[in-house]
Image 1: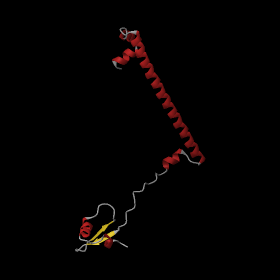
Image 2: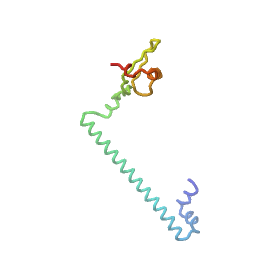
Image 3: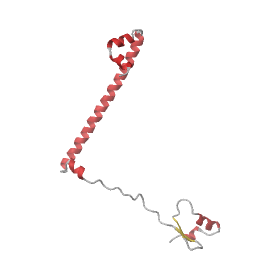
Length: 133
């Protein structure tokens, strides 16, 4: 315990520590302490209500398990559902360009345009000429 708390919780030591304070100062300290006590009581009440709600929900879930003919042990034995590793579908290729070396360059038409396509467009060709039907 710190010195402050030991003085605060011991009657005679507290009285000796505050003997130089005026009545107004003591009342101010008492008001502050009462405010702290009220806040602490409110917090404890909220925690008790939250615990009560949690217990009620647990009881409801247990009742639902009983109604379904299941036991808590059945939940522990059950395997969790596997999450899909596939995030999204791959976008279809929209444009294909064959360069002079015979390499195919594919582009979905989304995002930054590849340099090969950009060079062809700069030379005067149309993007529609590389469109897949």
